[in-house]
Length: 484
Image (cartoon, rainbow, N blue to C red; front, side, top):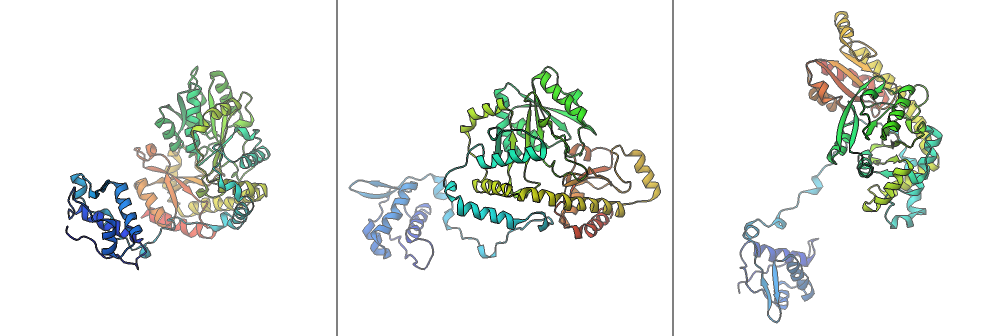
């Protein structure tokens, strides 16, 4: 038998049996050991490589488990029959490790403002979870969400939004898309297979329902929200709306239209999916009353999220189901597992219980209102064109912007973004790329509008993470580069 054992290196961090296993595996894959060839005994290899029989046995056991060798009773170990493709392939384990010390991580491409969240208070609540409630972390989270967080959500929504619900109606998930996936199954059980969405609207939600086999009907949006008269009649369906701050137009549904939408749902046996994603961030007057608080027929599913009011990485959202839909969910929830971190759910529950969440909301309203005003002023100052161009823009603009120039701004006095209407030959990809190079988060308003024959480009400009003191200079440079 030809020798094939090499010395192992005791100075390496790789266990000795793994070194031996990799060597023998490599000899098999390289063809130095033929199919059916008998291998040396454990004692022989141990002696040749200066290893213990136990270590050698561990290497053989790994080779047996993966199928590189076989064991014949009273005979020994033999090279197994390996497919030609595997034998001729390079040994993946022989690849050199990357230089991990030289690897760098992207810390984010956008500007950020540390003043938007008090991580010290969050850390304080998190420390309490690990010191006072660590026993709760030894078990998986409730698929519906932690009971203590569902309780705090109900308390907060009743006091701040007039939403009345019990913790049994609350379902917590990792973002609205996951919740929509749960909702898809509930709607199917209810015999609903058509979902109406706002146009333009939140595309990821449309994709979730479409991917699950629902028919999608896109309903146009006006300055008063979704066009209710275009919703299907006598067909049980669901309609996804954001009446308090429609994304991305910013339109607000007036009270008359809200009652009309509720009447449509009741008359057609349909369900309203109300996304109230950033209703707390309204900078003029009180937040608009949600549909759920007006609903008398249990036809509204209420969606909320903590991404805008805490920090996006938290990925905690919730929905409040009408009682009958909550009962349906209870019959299917055991088919799923909770994807939100239990530790983060408990931390958030303490954060809300201690009053920190409400304090943070008040702080954000003040800070974001200042940022919004600074952005609107900066765009107005740096984007003005000649009087002739201004007159041309005023005549052709159908979106009623707040100012007139190279860039027009739609300011809804709420949320974390504004809509920009830009007169330019540049594509929206070019415009967004310039913004990204300056650390700004900008996305196209709507692919359909950006590819139209009109040279106006519609963009969503996120201002919430730009430090207040950098807004003026950053927007000045942005506009200058857009104009070149």
